[in-house]
Length: 278
Image 1 (cartoon, rainbow, N blue to C red):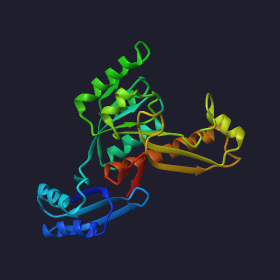
Image 2 (cartoon, one colour; image 1 turned 135 degrees about the horizontal axis):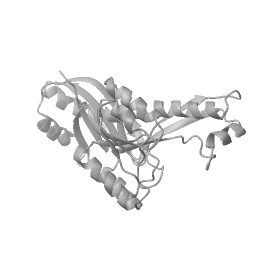
Image 3 (cartoon, rainbow, N blue to C red; image 1 turned 90 degrees about the horizontal axis):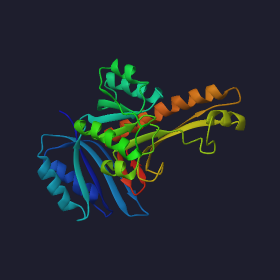
Image 4 (cartoon, one colour; image 1 turned 30 degrees about the vertical axis):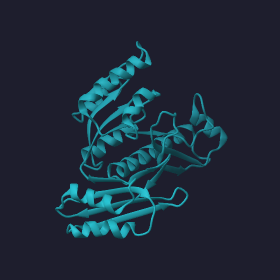
C-alpha cells in the first residue's frame, strides 16, 4: 500500500503530536515516519507524518484541523511523481544529470519538457525522447521572451520549474505565478569572483572549497529560501579548469539532492528559511 503524507504548520502548543497521531489511529492508519520541529523564536510548529491506511483524506484533514490551532495549515499529500519542466541554456552538466536520473526513475518526478534560450542542447535532449522548446531571446524584449516561455510551459501544467543553469534573470511577473515552485542552482560559494573568468580568479586567490546552492526562486535575485548547500574541497594542485569541473560536480549534487527533498515534501517554509525533514 502506498504511503500518504500529512503536513502541518501552526502556532506551537502542548499536545499537538498526540492529537494528530490519535486522529490517524482512529482511522486505522499506521504511522511509518514522523518528524516535527518547533521554531522557538517564531513559536511555530512543523510536522511531516508519513502513514499508510485506506482512510478518507477529507475526514482526516477535517479532524486534524479540529485538534490544532485555528490558524493552522494542514495539507494531505502523496508521494506521486511531480510534474516538472526544466529550463536550461548552454551548460549541459546539470541537465544531463537530471535526464539520466529521470531515465532511471531516481527523481520522483516526470520531466515533461525542456525549454532553452539556446539550441546547443536540443539534440542531446532528443536522445531522451523529450520535447525541446527553443525560444531565442536575442530579437525580443525580456517581457516578450518570458511570455513565449510561459506559453510553451502552460500546456504541461507543471508542479515545478527547475532552472538547470538557465542563464536568464526572471522578472517578478514570471516568478509570482510559480511562488516557491521554481528551483535554481548556482555557484554561490564564489560570490567574491564576479565578472569574467570566475574560476581563473578563484585559482589566483587560492580557494580551498568549491560550492553550490540550490534555492527557491523569489522576486529578489538569488535571495530565495535555501534548500541545499554542498561543497567540495580543493587545493593548490587544482588549476582553473579543475576548479570549474569541481564546480560542475558540486552543482549536480546540490540540485539533485534539493529536488529529491522537495519532491518528497520534505521541505517546509518558515519565512525565508527552510525546515528540512530528511
